[in-house]
Length: 502
Ligand code: DMJ
Image (tube, rainbow, N blue to C red; front, side):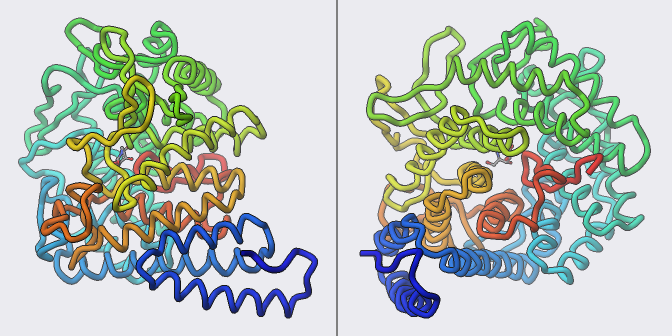
């Protein structure tokens, strides 16, 4: 039961708060933290006292910061400079070509959270060796959003000439990938030889359309317009295709047939293209009107074609198969989309219908967490015959993904709905409880087996965990001044970049 009311005096409120906080503390250490948290949520949504919310948020923010501190300390001690740390063994692991991926992806999160000495040390580390002439094949989009995005955002936080040289060196290698059909980027590139190819002779829409923010930023920082021109040509090509395709494209491009093939969705291999349409417009000072128009065009197509409400009442974004049939599934990856709708509302003003859709979609994504045994989301769920949410066994793994907390972050900024804050805290608590291995956080084999499972971990801590998942949690609980959405734009990989005319 929630005691107190908005009209009560400060001292009474304070004593209620203290009593409640002590109760909360006891509840949190008790086994069923989630149930305890529900009680807290009821009190919070009664809107009794903003002091309580503030305290609650700043404590949660500090807890997330502590987890980043632990994650970074483990990596720094056991695997400094490697692409990853194996979270079960504490061993370094170069699974991305040996480009210090985890280090680069952590840079702006370290800075944002106030770990400035670690930021400086890590930024210096990126200058140690010439990473980019290694004889390895890399995925061009992943290297762009993770490595180039991480480096340019770090440079904006603390500019120095050596770091900029590193950004340019990387940009020059990545630029070698352009040339498929004269203008498009190949998906894969060998950094040493410069040989580029499209694996399976197909390229994902997001692999072509998610290079823009990073390449444009590199041009802005270096003064060399080459990088921006490369992506602009690709953007123009895609805008025409998008127009011809009615605002929603199939997810893979066949350069030989010059056509898009496969399913339509906002999940894997499509997702971030639609996101970058909006964010390019935003980050370039809202002047490129065509990007804005085409983002809206694509949004209408996505909502008209993919938006679904199951008969049990769950709102989600389904997929359309190549043959035109519905696939009533929801990928966790697609959970970023309501956040994008919320961002649009933040930037452009109140749109009640859009807010309702964003909230409905986010609630379903949150329910993926709530309904699993470990309170962490499987990678994909199904709604057979568009009825009840089902969690197929073969997709029950959890990969420390950020998309749901990303949407919670934007939606909370938009609505200040405290239940979103509760959901973020529940997800964070479940992460600590189930996904924390000895030397780092780990992806999980199956979210629907209990904690006595002998080998719950997949022994992998993806670099987007510090770049996105922890960052979005921190920002959700943090003050708005930490990141101004009217001045900064967050890339698809969670890296924070300044808008051009901010
Ligand atoms: C991240 O690497 C990026 O968010 C990307 O755009 C797609 N999703 C993964 C994490 O799930």
